[in-house]
Length: 195
Image (cartoon, rainbow, N blue to C red; front, side, top):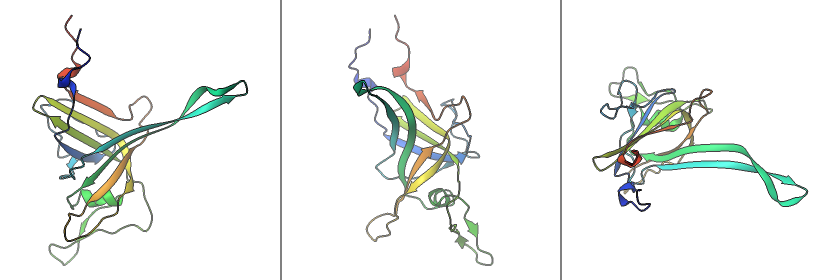
């Protein structure tokens, strides 16, 4: 029987990458295969804070006259979010941060581009992929097949700091019978123990 205390199973996300794709895209399950650049756009450098992963479930209590404690709980809500700050400004990151549309070249102005910010919010559903490694033997991939940026941080433009495009990406319900998100792990910690 394996020991409950096993330091080889402690995970440190030493380095990672974030990708965005059309809603419904799936991550490559074969870890010998990289993320297809025709499908997944690499969001590039992110801040050293990495990614904050949050899962919050809301349970509503069922109160009874006969007891001061709840008799049971009803699942009311589930929020699954990834929060991170992008450091690069380009045709993939700015529209992702702003909520859709595209960067366009300006007519008759070589090397000049325009991004029009809509006067109202719009739906911009995407798939989001996350990959991180811990050493050479451990790689995790996480994909949300359908979600949207639900919060954008303020952009601070200053002389002594890089501008950040900080976002919170929230998973949206998938098709009936499909998962909200999926972890893929190349990690010996999950191998079945030998009897």
